Figure 1: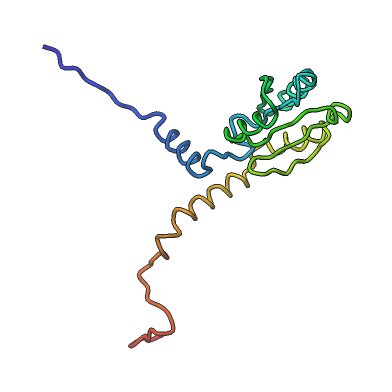
Figure 2: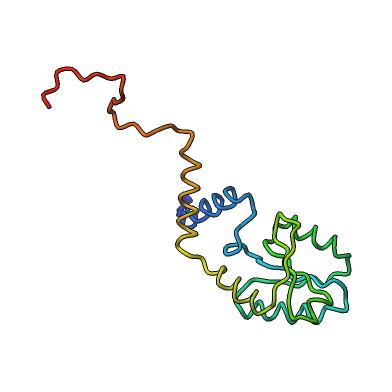
Length: 171
């Protein structure tokens, strides 16, 4: 009779926990530099599909994760759909953008839109795409502050304060 043996090794356990912590910390609304899908290019109508595809290709060449939404839905539906998917940037393309070689940027959680020349957009957001050590340090600091703020001050077994009188001290 043979006894089955099972070996267990958690190679990715800590990685999975870290990803879980990230998702919990950001509530799914990842910052631009860590979002799996960073931008979605949305043409206003089928007339602007070719410009939207061109913009998408330039964005991908700059190292930014992007998709084009060519579905036959109205603009408000597309914006709502991608906002609920928590995409950090929505890039709207219409006649004004084609004429000026620009994109209209709509950021997650805001109704405010800004128009930006395409080359400036690529330069600005490809620089943001690179995770800096400051961003990582800010995440760690904010995360651990949130995790420890309800635990109270650290105790190092010393009693101090104006109401404490030290008796029998030689120094």
